[in-house]
Length: 256
Ligand SMILES: NC(=O)c1ccc[n+]([C@@H]2O[C@H](COP(=O)([O-])OP(=O)(O)OC[C@H]3O[C@@H](n4cnc5c(N)ncnc54)[C@H](OP(=O)(O)O)[C@@H]3O)[C@@H](O)[C@H]2O)c1
Image (cartoon, rainbow, N blue to C red; front, top):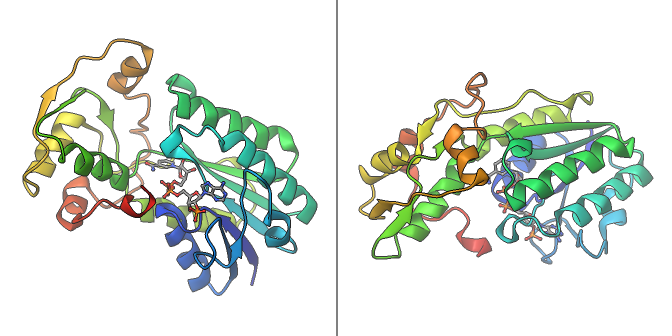
């Protein structure tokens, strides 16, 4: 059985990846900045505690990210992971990334592209798994929008949402395998516009009330064109409609 370190193992995807690896009989360390939240306390920005957490592991799953701040520390965090992976001599560094990021010039995505590049150029054996937006992320945005009287939203944006747990299962599977470089993209079962996603959501939830917001620019163009989707990879099986029926609270609430 292998030894793994999961960064971001306290997050929405990471928690399930940890469970999955443990269910497979592996020893799993979970890095967290918060004492008691994981098995090892460490901070990927300062680097404190990370080398000790990674010492002796066979593979690292890097699922930590500062998404709420557009990934402004993600490159530094990834550099820390690469250093620790190199020192530990890991056989596989699995990085969770996002579909289409090089085609949409959104700040968070630019940082993710830079992280991918650092990993590819590091010489560390690696696997990069790009997934589409999680059901949980869209639900979180809709719970937030629901707190406003009415919310202008770009209803023509396209998404192919996927259950974070299904991406987590794939992530765990990749971590136990041989390094693939770029793994095939991982997408949800269907591509829907934001209007369609909200129509389905509103069958269950009273809010949000929305109006269309026309957005100019290349970022909006990218989401309208669905550059963030991969219709040729409909891997996830849990539909948005089925997910919505189970969504009772913001899955990211604890982190806000
Ligand atoms: N959300 C989506 O729709 C989506 C889609 C495709 C890919 N992804 C990618 O999947 C990965 C996981 O996303 P998620 O939404 O599951 O994440 P999340 O729930 O927001 O969790 C973020 C994690 O990062 C950790 N973290 C942040 N800064 C850290 C630091 N300085 N040192 C150590 N740990 C730190 C946090 O740990 P502590 O707070 O415990 O320290 C937390 O576990 C990310 O790389 C994301 O880009 C997300």
